[in-house]
Length: 224
Image (cartoon, rainbow, N blue to C red):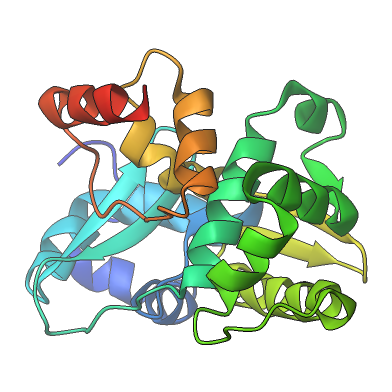
């Protein structure tokens, strides 16, 4: 064991923070530094909780970017699969998170900027069809409102999972957990460009684990 403030697993499980943290992790939420006491609890109890969650077929992952999440390796806890809209919005938010202009704003952006970036990367009609694969007819009069509604729905889902905080009707606070959406291009020479191309092609995926160097090289070759 290394520096845990909890001498035993039993004491870690008896801490007031454990029930809320445990429920959040099992529901797929990412717990980051922004979550204060919950994050600090995980840091202190990590040595005990890693083997504890392994018994449930899960890996308690700590990322150097400053967040924790549970990665299921079996079916004991089930898995929360993101919708196409959540994945597409998540990867676009990851791009915005990596933008120095966002950092200058304290990690906050307006929803308008998200919609503009989505439309710029994939095109208004392609964006509509990606979010509505069963609709054959594109009606420009209603498409914009439909997209706004579906993006809002995706944001609510991503907020529940700890990827973004919704501040009022217009402001979004981007969280480091969004970097999970950049995992498929993490090993590329230009990950931002690679992520832009994934979004533009509608290949929005959330990697369950960081790819090895060979997989990253294959992605870079495909992105050229």
